Amino acid sequence: MTHAKAIFFGEHSVVYGKKGITIPLPEMKVTAELNKNNHIQKRDKILTYIAKKCNVADTTQIIIKSSIPVGRGLGSSAALSVAIARANKCPNIKEIADDCEKFIHGNPSGIDVNQVLSEKPLIFSKKDGAKPLNFNLNAFLLVIDTGLIGITKDAVKRVKENYEFNKIYIEELGEITEKVLPYLLKKDLRKIGFFMDKAHELLRKIGVSHEKNDDVVKICKNSGAIGAKITGGGDGGCCIALSENFEKAKIIQDKLKERGYLSWIVSV
Image (cartoon, rainbow, N blue to C red; front, side, top):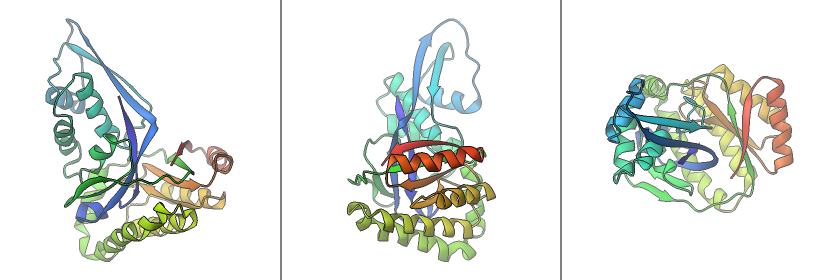
């Protein structure tokens, strides 16, 4: 079993060596159960690759139960790799999950694997790796599904192809991660929300915000969210919105539901 993750700050800029901040989503989990039998299990190419890396035989049935939506930037593939590796008691779980992420995403930053393996928020960079970041906002975060699968690999490739244009925005995204740190530790929700809004605008400028992402952010802000933004690669996937208490988060959730968007409320 393992949990999902959300990128709080640092989408795309972390690919270029900037720092990113991630949080665990323990309310969203995936479990894997292994049952040995005499029948070869039919698997797609991703599950086939993960099973091979975890030394799971073709005749072992992998039963997956997950509340993590796939292709939404919440670390579903990393969580799946870790869950299967844990189910088969593999000793080198992180190495396995890293290899699987490279197979699935091409050139991942490594941030997903580190966070699905950690119960605490992390600050991450390619240079320094992952380090625990001990903060608790005593607030609530909505995780909102746009309904569109966002292919992180494609978004990362597109940002790279237009790097000269995007460079200034990537630098600003990296700066936001540094600037927001003291406010996370002080639980300054208003300032955190300000930086969430700013980060979303920068992600929009580098071309990874689909109109559905912008629609979700607008609904959240109009309904009282302190801040709202894309989480993950973009091109759809999920957004996150910050609320100071559960009651206000529920109001936002109801407004989103009216517009056809599924969401989850998690503590942060």
